[in-house]
Image (cartoon, rainbow, N blue to C red; front, side, top):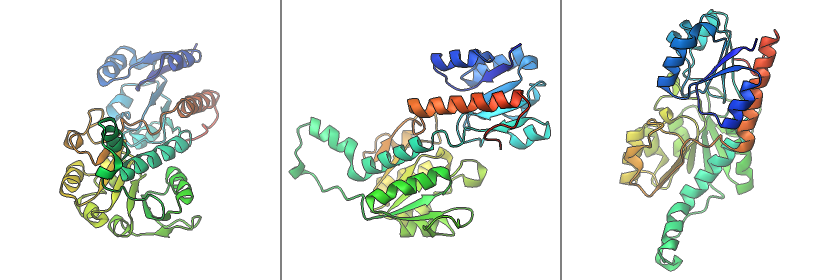
Length: 310
């Protein structure tokens, strides 16, 4: 008999079919379907696949008496009740490392698009405006990049900075001995030093509004902020005011506090570039994440440790 898997995020038809080869799949990609599925099938479910922003709550875990495995499809797990799961003996694993390159690529795409004003220039070109009527967009190269978070993704973003001859600094919970970059003990000091502030830290209560009005003011009127981490890390209201008032020059965001709704405060602003939480999405990255889950699950149900446990 196949293990019963509850999947709580969007999946393509191809990936649903792939999961169905190994599992009795219950597909519930939104909150209403999740509640219905847990109510109808809770006693049968042995594994849950979710994402960090959706998570799995204490109440949901308690409604699944046979649950033995929870996996996050990506690296984030901020809304999974990990301690409660472990107290029940449930194994928790993630897809850490499967989409790092894709996210780092996208971070640089957002940064270049914001600093060079590429979306705005595209529209002006279509409107027949020639370069002599426009202000000069600044260089990306030979600037200072401040990373808020220097985990695996942060390190890959920093590695890509070498090609632009950009100086890298970072803020982390503690300094790392394995990198040559300058360490800053707080985010405000990092922002004061940096031209570009890139958020690559996990979400959750500990980092909520870590980038606030004070940090944005420290970044300054020629500074840019990019967020490919979690929307909760940046205070959206403070960011909107900073962009409107010219306290910072621009922003590139893949994540928002309002997800999946777009950030209404920012939609009318032409100095922000927005994408719909796709930094970690590519055919290669998503397939790697799916394959990682399948291997984590295979090992778990064979009595082995998963590849990437928490």
